[in-house]
Image (cartoon, rainbow, N blue to C red; front, side):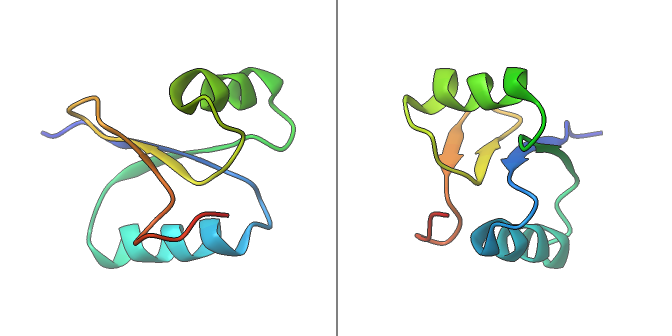
Amino acid sequence: MAEKVIMYTLATCPTCVKARKILKQRGIDFEERVVDDRPDWAMDVIRLTNQNTVPVMVWADGRVEIGIDGERG
């Protein structure tokens, strides 16, 4: 069984809503980490990307992707 993708999001970010929908449509299993009230997850985003933007996907192979389909929140 493949590992889940970890996706860092904000609850009301329109690009994050789009990312959720795209991953579900593509049948990609993911664990969503909503950073709104989790400073530790917000720090993970900064540590992974050197940026303060979402969505951020961490793929099973360790690749980190910022945004979805060229769009960032």
